[in-house]
Length: 275
Image (cartoon, rainbow, N blue to C red; front, side, top):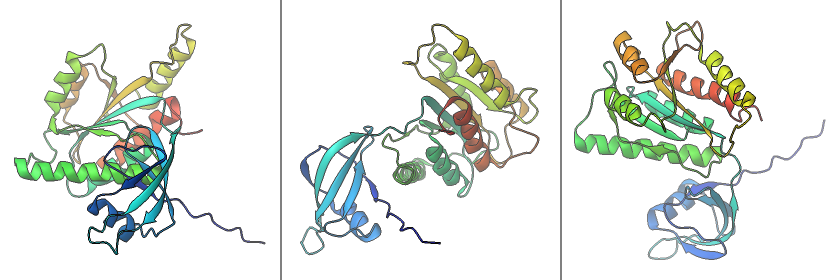
């Protein structure tokens, strides 16, 4: 059996700044270090840049900058190309903050599965709020995970990350804009209806509607508890705020599994996971 050669994957790199096709770009020193030292790109290599505007930009490394005082890489940016891999479903993950690296896992896998917005929340059994300095550092760390996961998964639209607030604040905010809020689901292992069944019912309703307008994408919000889950009164408050209680099966999932699992179900039924 003949072996087929594996095509090397083009390195993708997030650039926090304006990108223009058919132009030269000098990267900042930190970005140049990441590009050359971490990603190991060399002069003449072709890479792909994105800045979250929905376009990919192929670029050629003209100079690595390692022999210059400023150590800033020089790139030739080629024509922009619109990315075509965003899901038709807008998904907001309202995730109770977990401890250790569990939150990192949740964010990374959620981005890979197509989440659009992440709202970290403090619940009764979640990690407790930190002081301002440590909170800012934590948010910066989470943002870096969103960026790296977008780089890896080929997304050109960067998911947004909201400042951490209490679950009650998040519910009040959603309730105050009920007309524009996403269809909310709160994960509840005791719920009588499954997330799968409710999403399928939504899909059938949309398919049957004669005036279905595809220019307005479906918007889904998923409320996920921390390691110990949400208490019954917290779930009740979510339901009072317009959320639908839902289960995803007979087994209890870890918090870092639950969010991505719900996103995967949503994408499989309403989105593009099976395409």
